Length: 240
Image (cartoon, rainbow, N blue to C red; front, side, top):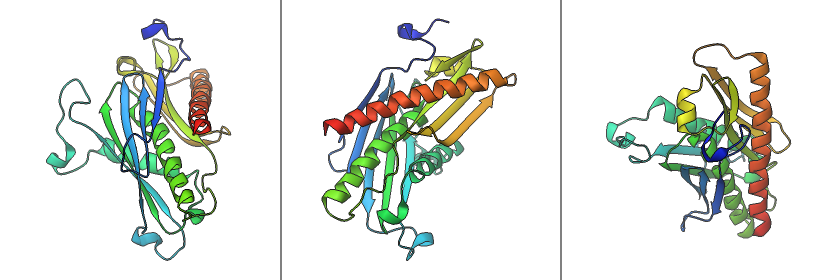
């Protein structure tokens, strides 16, 4: 099938991870998956939510939002509407779960790290870009804690990243843009660790059921794409 920029069906869009993008954040990353651009910023708070207070453990949470002109037609800010959409709540919970899964929260100590993910331009895959960039922001925030000697060991157990895979015109395709996503009959979002362990998989079909062969192919493509993203993340920290 034809893809923009002559991409192969198992090929990522051009990926950019820009660390320390936000001056005042303890950790931040400007992430680009093609024309999807997200700013991820980490804030360290020396307190935790009431439900884990006095446990000695920390907490990691996320907030996600799309700016009004991140899409073709302007959307109203959710703050103006007075409530978050279900999609927003789902995505920010996914980001928080994904990050907590690869961190030893006891080693983090009784503090909270909040990750703000703001989509400034959307062209498909905003949640997977946000998760991948959030990991970078989180790791930078952890390095800040280590530098300040507030913790003595890195609580991050593994690198992790996320990617989308869909079925378009009966072909499995990796890292869909909006045009491909809009005509896909199956859509999946995958979050894996560097060792290949599954953090989360979300696969759904629009019109016809997904075959076993297609689901296996989607999984294979996701493994390949996430391995490449983690290598990009690791290269970033090797340069620091």
